[in-house]
Length: 151
Image (cartoon, rainbow, N blue to C red; front, top):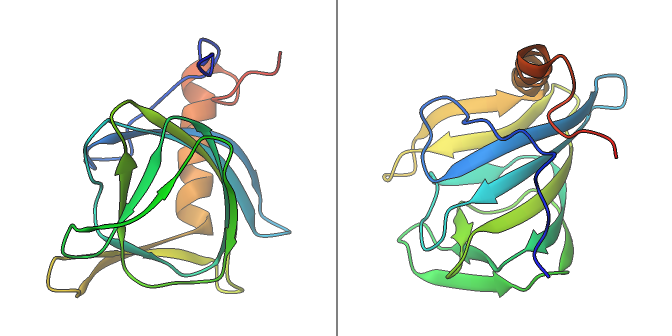
């Protein structure tokens, strides 16, 4: 049975390709950001590095992680839970079908969460707590409610 996302409002994140985002919550005091990502099948997102503790749960499909050169690094099946410290540069994506992953990020004290990287590994930009708070407010404002509706 597939994950029923009829009550989830998916939004693009800027100009980034191959995924949609649904913000769940941002707790500024605790520096915790929760969101869902829906990855397109057989695509890879922008090269990036997690700068903060990240927990994930694969809700639907197959979550694939790739090395910076695009070669397959790891496959996480539906139901897989992972808690990871800040790590190495990688790409992510879905397998042969769309993939939905729940993320819970504990931002660093300065709020940093991700570095988005160019192919030569130089930093394109850093995303942090305030960026995701802005996205959360924008998504909430678009519907009057959080992007993930309570049932």
